[in-house]
Image 1 (cartoon, rainbow, N blue to C red):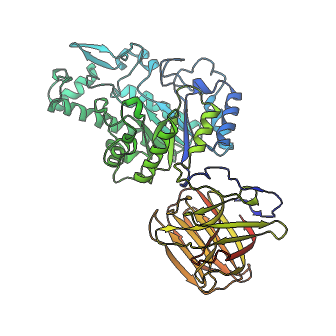
Image 2: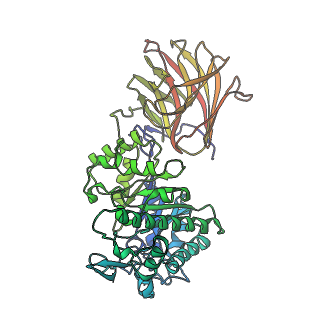
Image 3: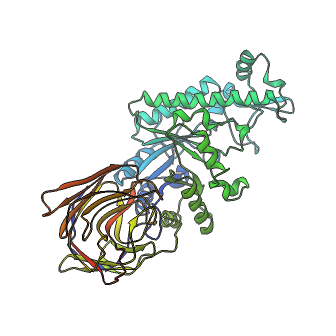
Length: 560
C-alpha cells in the first residue's frame, strides 16, 4: 500500500482507469487461454501478459494439457513433464513456467486448466484404458461422433492415477494459484462398458449394465447414471486430497461443468461440492440452443441449478461466457447476474483461438455493466479522479491546484436508507487503502448535510458503502450499508467543522476516525462485512437542503 500526497500538479478532464461508466462493482475477469494458439515462445507470453495487465485481467486460466484433438493431440502438455508427452515445439519452451513468472510479476493469478478424460495420448497408451461405448449391441472404443476424439475410462484406477499424477506434478513444481479440471465426464449413457466397469457394477448391483436399454429412461438407467456420477464425485475428492497433501496445499480447485440438461454425461456438481473452491458452469446459451435468460434466470437456468447444487458450501460460481456475444446480450446477462446472483464477482471468458487485443479491451470496457445512464460530469480534477452525481441529484466540484483543495456543492440529496443521492468525487480502489482529508469549511448547507470520505462498492445508488463524514451541526458520523439495497446504519461522535477525517479499508474491515488536528485520532466506528476487492474511494457530499449555493471545502488530502 503506497502513500500518495495529492499535490495537484496534474489537472485535466476527469477520467478513471476502469469501469467508471458502470454503476456496479466491476466484475473480476478471467480469460481461458488455449496455449497452442496463444503461447509459442517467450515473446508471445510477454505480449499477452502486457495486454492482460493493461485491460484488467485478474486470472489467466492456461491450458497446460491439450484439450482437443486439433493442432496437437489431446493429452500432450506445454510444460516440462516427466509424466505426460510434451507437445512438439515445447520441449525447450516451458510455457507454464513462463506464464506464471510473467503473470505474477504483473499481479495476475494463473490457474492451470487441466483436461482429464479427453486424452488421446492416454487412450493410445493402453488399450484397457479406452472408454468403451455400447453401439448396436456391440462394445467399441469411443472416439467421439466424428471418430477423432479420444476418451479414456474415468472409472479405471490406472487412468485415474495417471491423470491425478499430472495434476500433482503441476501443483508441486509450479506456483499456480489454482487448478481447474475439465472433461471429468462421460459422453452419454452408453459408456463406459469396458470389462473393468462391468465387473465393478455387477459386483455392486448384481446385474450387468449391458442389460440396460440406454436409449430409454428407466429405474435401471437412473441407477447406472447415479453410480457413475458418484464415482466422478469421488475422483474430484481424490484430486482435492492430492492437492491438500502437496507442498502447495492452498491451491484453489475448480471444475468446468456442462449445463445440467446434459444428465447423460454423469456430471453432478452436488456430488463434489464439498471439495471445490469454485465451479465454472459453461453458460454458452446460444451454443446449447437456449435463450439468454437461461444464463441468469432466477427460477431456472444454469446459474440457478449450479447455486442449488452448491447449497451449504462456500464454493464460488464463476460463469464461463463466450467472448463474441452482442452488447445487448452482455447488458442483459450482466444485469440478470447482478440482480439474481449478487455473490458472483468473477466472469470467465473462452476463446477457441488466440485472444486479440480488441477482445480483451471489450471485456474490460464491460466490467461495470450494465449502466443506468448516469455518467460522470465534466470537471477539472487531478489525474485519475472523476466526478458523478449518484442518484441524479445536482452537484458540482472545483479544484484549486494552488491551494490543493476541493470545493463541493449539491442540494436535495442524502446518503441514508436503502438508496442514496450524493456528489461523489472518486477514483478506483482495488484492495486496501487509507484516506485522510480535512473538512476546512462549510457554508449554506443543511444541518444534516454530510461531507467527507466514502468507499462505495459500486456507483449504483443502492451500493454497499462505508463513510466517515462531518455535519455542520450534528457531529461526525461513521455510516455504512452492509448489503446492496439494505438499510444504512450510523455511529456518531461529537465533532465540528473544521476537522479531520480518516477512513481505511483492510480486507473487509473498515475503520472511521475523527481528529481536530490531524494528529490525535478518535475512532468513531469499525465494521466488518464483505465488499468486492474492486470498489471506489473518494470525497462525498450529500445535502438535504434546497440551497444550491451550499458548499464544502476539503483539503490536505492524503491517500495511502
